[in-house]
Length: 264
Ligand SMILES: Nc1ncnc2c1ncn2[C@@H]1O[C@H](COP(=O)(O)OP(=O)(O)OP(=O)(O)O)[C@@H](O)[C@H]1O
Ligand SMILES: [Mg+2]
Image 1: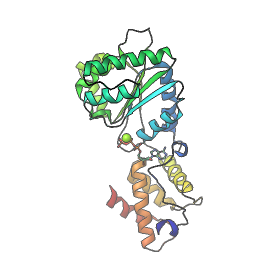
Image 2: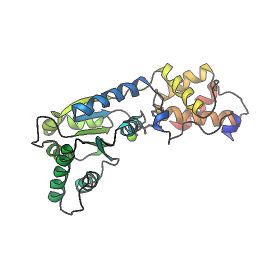
Image 3: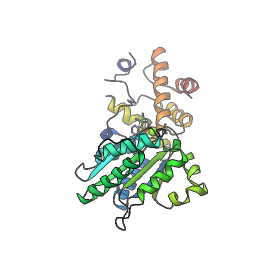
Image 4: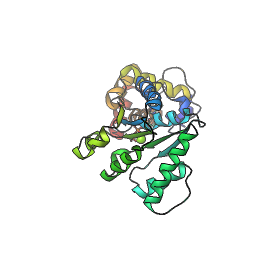
C-alpha cells in the first residue's frame, strides 16, 4: 500500500540490496580502496564503526569483487563461535578434510594456506562482529598469521566490529596481535548531503526519481538519524507510513519527527 501510494515499484531500503547497487558514500569508497590495498599488503585489517553504518555490506561488496582464481575467502559472520567452530569453518573453506582435534585442524589449516600459496592463491579470512571475540581467539589468530613461510604474511585477516574491538585490542596482552595490524579504518556516518543522496538513491532503486521528502523533512531525517544508514532507512520507512496514513503525497517534517520517536 505504501509503495503504491508513493509511486514506487517496491519498498525502498531493501536489506537484501545487491552489492552492485550500494550507495557510493565517501566512507564506502574509502573503505573499498583500503580493502583493495590490504589485498596486497596482507596481515590484519581492522574495520570498526558504530552499529548500522554499513560495515557488513561493505565487506560483502569486497568479497563479491574477489577473483575466485586468486583468492579463497572465508567469511565467519558470528564471532561468538568457539575456537573449535572457527577452526572447523576455516579448515573446510581451505579445503581440509574433516578432523576432530584442534591440533589436527590447526595443522590442516596451516597446510591448506601453504598449498594455496603454492598455487598462487591467497586466503582472505573475515571475522564479522569481531568485537565479540574472546581474548584467547586473538592469540590463536596471531599464531595462524605466524607462518614461517617467507617475509610476506600468508593471508589477509579482516576483523570487523563495533568500536569496542579497538578497546579490547588496546589491552597489553594483545600487543603482539596489535603489531600485526597493517590497516585500520573507522566507518564514518554520512553528513547531511550524503544522507539526502542515500535516501534518493534508495528511492530511485525502488522506482521513484523525483523527491518524496520535503527539504525540512530531509534535514530532520539527518538530525534524527545521525547519518547512520540503518537508522535513516528505519525512520524514512516509518515516516512514509505516517504520511500515507495521513493521505499525503509528500513526507513532511511532522511525520519524520513522529517516526523518529517510534524508531529510535
Ligand atoms: N552504502 C550503502 N548503500 C545502500 N545501503 C546501505 C549502505 N550502507 C549501509 N546500507 C544499509 O544499511 C543497513 C546497515 O548496514 P550493515 O548491516 O552493513 O551495518 P553494520 O555496520 O554491519 O552494522 P552492525 O554493527 O550492527 O553489524 C543495511 O540494511 C544496509 O543494506
Ligand atoms: Mg554488521
